[in-house]
Image 1 (cartoon, rainbow, N blue to C red):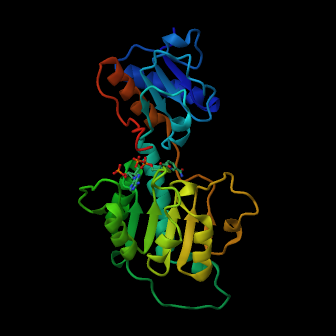
Image 2: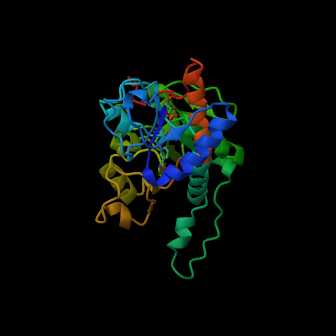
Image 3: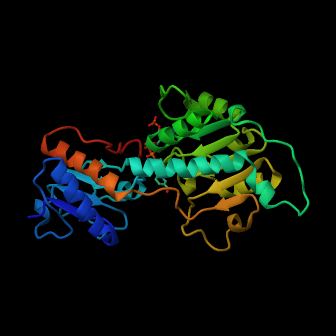
Length: 310
Ligand code: NDP
């Protein structure tokens, strides 16, 4: 009888099976996970992914929890057959991967490595960049990933600020919210990192009006979601030099169409949605912790707020 159903990417089943069984055993839970089921009514916990084999959850009438294996929840939120509590993935492995990506790109823009990549032979401009302590890096989105990355960037030495729906109290990061807070962040930021979810409130948040309020020569790094950016507005700002450079990992259409101007723009680095991913060993421990909570009648971790859209 399958109580825990793996309905994620079939290619990852073998590793999930091994890591989940180990984590279940370590948590003292005498339960098995399977990628097969006879009666959907017996399934109480489903490990779900937008690219998995189960997308119609109607027959699973006794689910206690749908545990998404992905951090972004746009797809399960749009799935009307998912009516049960939905938890998103918050995984330390994913956070570390994201901070590796963000730190690398912050340093790339800070050190102006593109300028040297594009330099003419013989170009010997020895003017130094500002010090990291004199640069401000702003995070739009201070959730699980934004906070983790911002702390790493602050620990490195950059002045680090962040904007989110609710104000945060984090030692090394100045926190802002609301329209006034956004204005302050835009005025101060030399490098902006987007780690917002895509919701009706954040779609096209980086538009011509917002870009006009940024510092001249600002750099933008987007590992969040493609629709956060009005692409025409960003391209115009890149053409004019208002935005000095962009690192883009996520796009409205993925894979990014081969004729998209981002591919050829000299000041854009396109990465193919590789900023970070769920790491099966650490993610399995989080999933099992939620199953343990379900078995003991405790509140689940990382539940999606459907009304907020993330
Ligand atoms: P969280 O849900 O933990 O954080 C979202 C943050 O955005 C929160 O700080 C939230 O504010 C803030 N936010 C949401 N709506 C608004 C708004 N209208 N105004 C201001 N702030 C807002 O998400 P994660 O940190 O886990 O992930 C962030 C995004 O990263 C994901 O949604 C996903 O799209 C993307 N991602 C990309 C990957 C890649 O490989 N490129 C991999 C994994 C994730 P508050 O804190 O107040 O709630």
